[in-house]
Image (cartoon, rainbow, N blue to C red; front, side, top):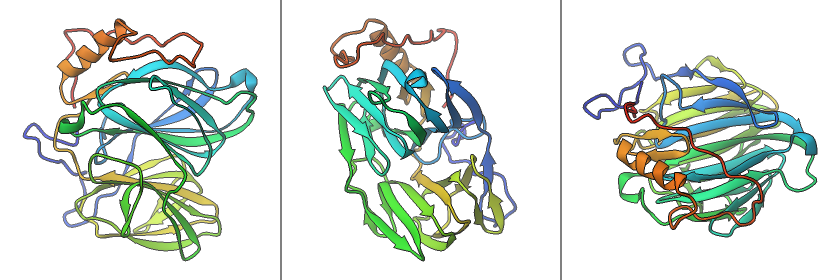
Length: 316
């Protein structure tokens, strides 16, 4: 299913007339690589998007050693931005623009794929210990799908407290504040941490589709308990959000204005029509080239793309 019907109109989740939307999104657990557990929240069969957010992996929590370190080989992206946000651990990003950047908790890695970029992700040399975090994709609006690729690392993010609860604005806008990270449509991604528990109320744009990812502990929204390891879709129409958090809870608020365009995914490519994805796939299969350059700092083998059957028609 999609958030848009055949007329391009946004479809809200089913609920009682006049009641605010609140539904749990079906997620899938899996193991990546040498043993990295993830929960894939987006896309799911019934929830393709939340605003422009089109992909969300909850990584861990787990413990890594040199024997089961992260090692994701060179692979391409188009039509999106990747957001990496860690609660514990560290990752080393390398890309075809020449950037090499370790990310640690409280820092943001934001990669803009646009027309095309390649990157790899590894555990830093000698790293061992806890690993826990989130990785997102943000679909780019049609007018920016072919923007030049870019990478940015941010440590100077807006941070504030409300009633003892810590809020970090990772990307976008919230409560009158703006992240320095460059994005291409109105959106929000905010990390909310309650070491001692408590309640807070946030002002949110009513035209934003919203979601809550429960990463640690639990939260209560409108009398409903939200469980750890789950993603909840809140739809549009709220002007404020009141959360009660148990001690040790941590949630991510995500959302934004719907793009009102098809958003198709195949492997690591995002685009508004299948022809764009097929073109990206053909270019990757002819790698390296002007579109997808080499990640010179990565010494392993590149990833192979899954074949897209020409008879298959992808749905957005």
